[in-house]
Length: 446
Image (cartoon, rainbow, N blue to C red; front, side):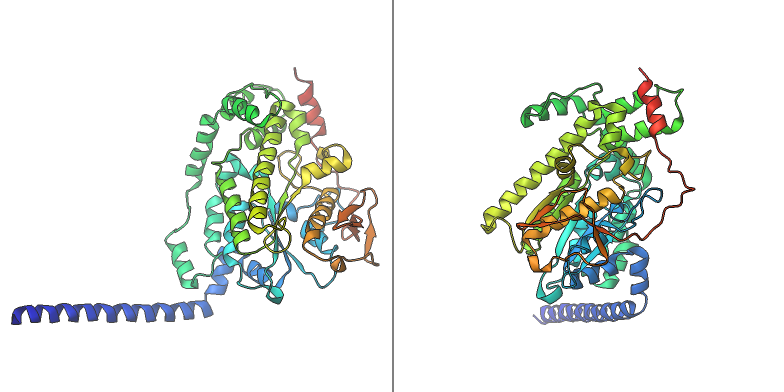
């Protein structure tokens, strides 16, 4: 009996000792966290995640936060006299009572934007959650972007998009507690997709389901397609051959519900709805003109189908939100789609020419002032259900009206397309490098 009592006492002492050690560890951890937060953390946070600080303040202090990638800030140094980003241009549509802040960086995508929601405050400016404008780049849903060799850097940055203890974030980075697949592993995943995802079978199935036109099927996989390209037109300049190869790799794929970027976008929509955040999805416009010049319908059919797939899924989420809220998704927690490809075609009757794209030899969504201004105008129009007419900024001495675009409707009120004053002057000695001549050579080939 005495032995059992001594054994129980010993176990109790061991337990108490463990609790004490654990308590000491917790105290030391929080003390170390406080010291780290006051000393090294601000510098290291900026080192590993340069936009986290700006994003944190934007979500707390701004009314509209524009989350974008390089298309927000890029401009054409040869043809643009306006270097304004889309988010800066958007501010022209509001008076001083509504603050617009852009947070963007090269290589961002909806997966990054979804993780940024971790920094959403409980309450933002004036006790209200900010409205989020999120760019949706269809090309970034494809294998070339999904398995980009630089994605590990993005995922490391995303560790800091949370309200975790600063020291815990640093521990996660040190232990590589994120998707840290190296460039070789990403390259393997990318080629596995190109090798195994059937273009012909998938397109046949999906075209019947969607009721779209019958697709052309020259190649069964993307790898077969760009493999054939490497054996053709070898007498043409390497630059145009590389361009054709890049367009196939970036656009010759088929969207489906298992797409990881689509899952990220769905999660982003759901989180915004749950947190009563007004969300505007901005569907960007790929360089369809170059794709058409290179391969015609054989390639543009994939661009058109994937864009339509995204529209359909977003419309489905809108209906679900409307059903839950019962107020047509206006006001807090609403979802709005600003479909730039469709809106541009409706306004002009065609898609923009390749001259409006900054990158002439690689498929990006980097566009000149004409298209950036159009995007800003359409986003402002899309925000008409959220912001009162009284917040609309009227024409003043700093703003001129660009009349080549028809007036757009804002909550029943017609507004013009604003063109800010010039902030950049062209250098007449510079000649823009274009792909026109090489594209001509390509089209002459049988």
